[in-house]
Length: 277
Image 1 (tube, one colour):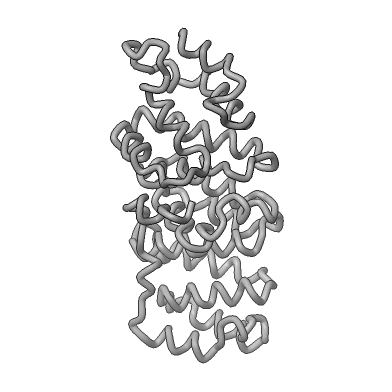
Image 2 (cartoon, helix red, strand yellow; image 1 turned 60 degrees about the vertical axis):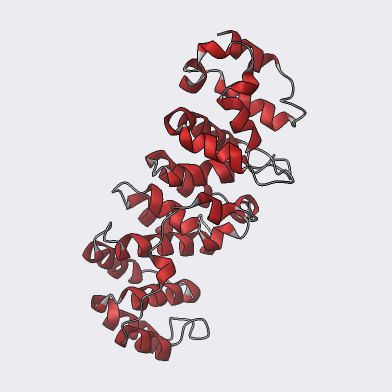
């Protein structure tokens, strides 16, 4: 318990800003703090907090050593990583510019295949613009769908709800669709169930750009049961052909092309984040 008091009384954590202090104050009520190795005494910089601290802010060097320690201590690290994400979500409008703790935390949970990471990944996509991109930058359109797929544990409803929501951005819906493509391609999510969802969704969706994305995903996955509904939407002028043309749709549908990026999960956090976070 002495460690909890020490953490709570710090106004800053080794010179970090107030937001990081808030993060660590909130750790004091978590099981992670209670499970500290008591042999470490008051020297927090020899406990896991040392490595958690090193992933919170952008520094000159990539925190490879800290990440390796957190990976080696996966079960001990998970509560801290979830706390980082919970606090980031609660304070997303007030983050200091150099703060990147949420990125490392979410990608670590994806690497761990952590089910709670799935909920957090979707919650961040539900934030209003410009916050999803402000929080994750280019990662949002590069590997974020793989983060969602890596944390997936059998419930597609949050993704379906996000895609149907009028309150989330076009970009967030696209990311959710690509994540579903990964799940279908890896046979983690039923093709027929997704096709059924899309069939119903297409009856009401009016956004030409989003319909173009759906046409691309359908062709990439070769969902033949959606061929006629998509063709009908092209014929009605409902799909933005500048974004994804009917000719390209038909060509890909008739081919054996598969997009390798729509199969991968987060298996190497160092490759995904080094130089990007």
